[in-house]
View 1 (spheres, rainbow, N blue to C red):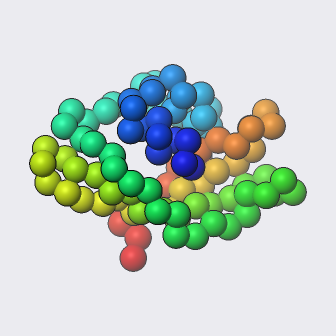
View 2: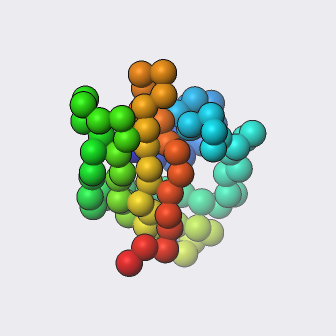
Length: 95
């Protein structure tokens, strides 16, 4: 999760696509011009250990968009694919 946040912050599309599950991976990642990611707080983790095949991470990411601060909250789902953890999808707008 932290590495994907960092990849969004530096707009590393190749890394984001490589760590996205093939079943849900978009053809490309669209970065919002004027978006600056500034911090990540992991709120909850479920699964995701060496014995699991799936897990979730609930996080809060802070940003500034064209000078206005904001935050994104998401519960992300991850699974193992070819031995590596990859992002499957997520729910935003969580409580």
